[in-house]
Figure 1 (cartoon, one colour):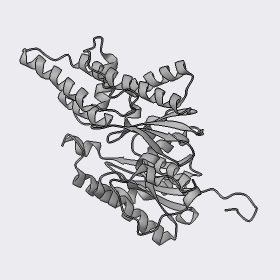
Figure 2 (figure 1 turned 135 degrees about the vertical axis):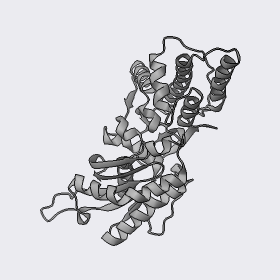
Figure 3 (figure 1 turned 90 degrees about the horizontal axis):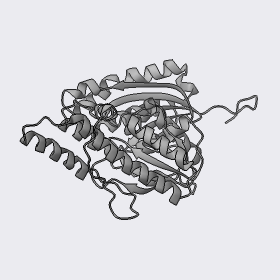
Figure 4 (figure 1 turned 90 degrees about the vertical axis):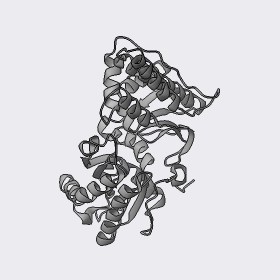
Length: 349
């Protein structure tokens, strides 16, 4: 769209993310410039339960969604009539939490007369990288979050092909379970990461490579190995070497993630390796990937921590790609907790 002077009018997307325990609303310009990115976290609420309680998460979203929308618009200095579209996480995620965002987005799109863009949560994590760098295709993405661990190949913009995924626990789930076994509160991942980097000793733990050539992952056995070490120490009347176990666990996880990601980049002749998802904030993983990619002359893109955890700016970035290729989504779309990333690929191909 152009203005009367002939200049291209910017695409301004109001994006809403409520897939789990963060209520976030952002305004994103042309898919890469963040004008606002407001996040209301529920971590303190769920800490008392040792993890996210779906019904509690849904209620908290309802309580703050309107306020977060208003703050996002005010911070961006944008009025509803200036918006090009309203985007929202359609899935995957907790169904009750997703519904809050979807209903809010539908209501705004209808009231403001704007198109609606249903957006895939993992596509959002992937396109968070576009908020910090221009993407070059083909590229490979290592997705590491609380509920997903995947290697996603993108031959072209908006086209996703999963070549590897976890067969059991996602890496974020494994971190939280190991943290609980070591006595850390929820969310446990940052505690394990910090202790692993501070440890002077290491308790050796197994690496799970699966079949030769496989890009899949498995972390349930590693989690069980940690529990076994902890229980054996206690049975002997000894205090478990918590720091050494944390370091052993993190080194095992990181080695497998880095090796398979680099191998996937080479096998697909990818121009870039993207890292995304909540666990992308893990300092041990970031450091190891940076070092390995420098050694292999692989261009690595990692978003800053604020764009690694769940946020609406990443949804706005992914929605822009969908908008450019496919336009809007029908207003009768439904929240889909099992939404397929590959099926969300743009239809231009």
